[in-house]
Amino acid sequence: MKKNISRFVEMKATVIETKGDRTTPPRRTISQRPDYRAVVGLDVGDRQTHYCVLDLDGELAVEGAVATREASLRVQFEGKARMRIALEAGTHSAWIHRLLVELGHDVIVANPRKVRLISSSDSKNDPADARTLARLAHVGPELLSPIQPRSEKTQVDLALVRARDVAVQSRTKIVNAVRGIVKSTGHRLPKSSTLTFARKAKDACPEALQPALLPLLRVIEELTREIELYEKLVSQKAETEYPQTKAIRTIHGVGPITALTFVLVLNNDRNRFRNSRDVGCYIGLRPKQRDSGQRAPQLGITKAGDSLLRRLATQCAQYILGPFGKDSALRRWGLSLALRGGKNAKKRAVVAVARKLVILMHRIWITQEVYEPLRGVALKSTAA
Image 1: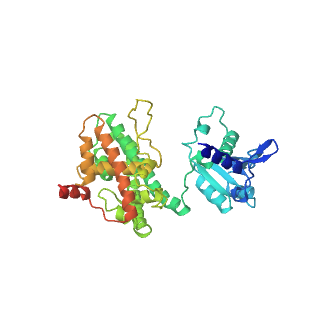
Image 2: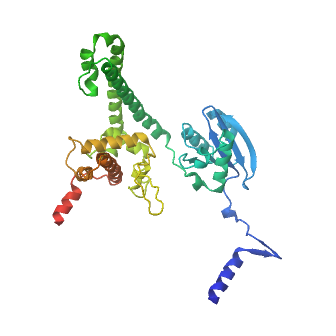
Image 3: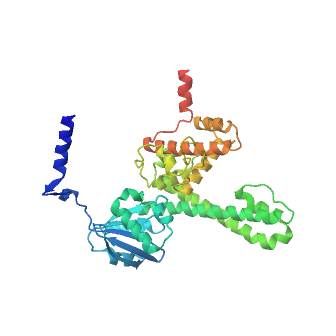
């Protein structure tokens, strides 16, 4: 016991320098000094960006605002000593991050879902948000839950997929609106797929509604043609520029759109996650947790991450579990979940299959192996 106490005293003596009756912490060595000279918080708006600059001691140095333009930000931060700059993820965060990194600064893009100190504040305004970001970045970057911004090429390629999704959603809304208008007059349009809806609806549309609905049907036809062009471009890009998606597309039910979106949302970095299971959590397919004591309620999924990829994964899961899905270990597992009873059993099975599907996609992306639908089932039957 005495040896342990004496060892602790010796260790403490090496850490603390004694000057008379005062004890002062050791001075920071050159290797421990930060490589930046100030900490900046940026509250980025669509037209104006407020900034707050702190010195290394955390004292307020200067505040102000600058136009949210490349030229204005370049004038403000170009040629300055290296700074740690924090901003929230948003519409302008990607290009601002690239610009400031180009100018030699250490840039942190914060996850707004994690920084509740800003969103839940009762005194929320742009200068106050910039001060909060600066102080959090000064204390520790981990408090901002930093995210990895996408590269410029990845962002441009992902815009093609998102543009197609906008066209698909617009077409769906117009189709639903046309059906609703016809139903309000006591008529019904025949069942049909979206591809043939406009043609069949023209023949079955009541004569009194034709002046109102025929222009909408022409818009649907035009959107259908544009969506087909989008899909050709996506398939071509997946084949030529992202050949690693070929292995992912061997999974029955996963097409080039889902495979390319998966690779682009993960910033074309297959080693971004240590464990493939983390991908399901990343796109919001993990159930929420609010456990307290003996209470562990069942909650819905978090819905964090990219909503487009989550929707595409859910659509693939519905196809896998549907009547046209091929036999596979994943399909059998999902159907067994759907048969457990309860009115929400089918919905929970779809979400569970979607989560397992993205994990499988990530694993195949890493290994580049051809998907074997009954791989696990074959092993079990052999062991039996």
